[in-house]
Image (cartoon, rainbow, N blue to C red; front, side, top):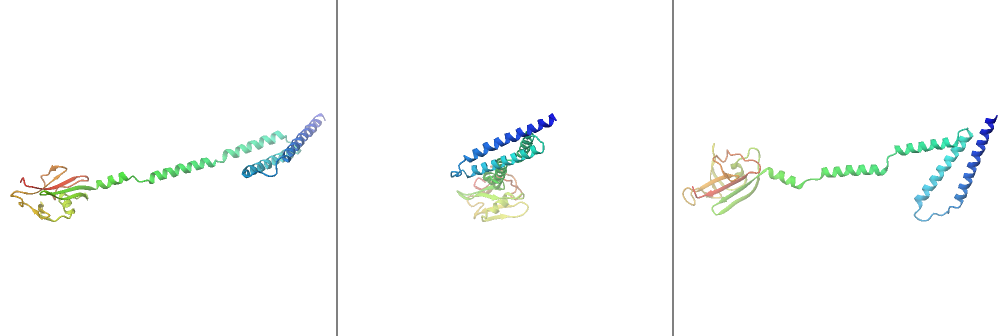
Length: 220
């Protein structure tokens, strides 16, 4: 009997406390201005949402009290559920940061390197210089393949050539300037990277970046 009376007294005290809290809340709400100033639309919505959550929480507590459950237990359960939902929901700022990082990485990979492109193109070429008697006939870069020779590079210059074909090609004239034209023993020779080559022009292979120089000499 005493236990039953204690439970009823606790229920009455709980209801009285809740009634007092609701009365104070309604009095505070009655003092709240009806018209919100310009620019406070978002804060007004947040306040309305907060009030709705508080009312829902109070209704849940009231139902729980009627069912014999303590108000503190109900509030504790609600706080645990709210924290669990917040922990599982990723923030928009975090997602935006990851997206910016991926976009930056993609842009960096897609960006071209002009210097690397020019270096690659230069590596597929050789530099050719053709010097006549007191006159320069040609100077520039020419594309090559893995089978290019000193003679094929000279042909690629599109200069007018006179030569004798066969196993070992002999160039006798370039642009009309032929051997022995200046004096007996004068004629055409070539170097690769500044070095004389004792080899036929059609047998000497060239490599990427080589410097080929055909020149007319009067030294014999």
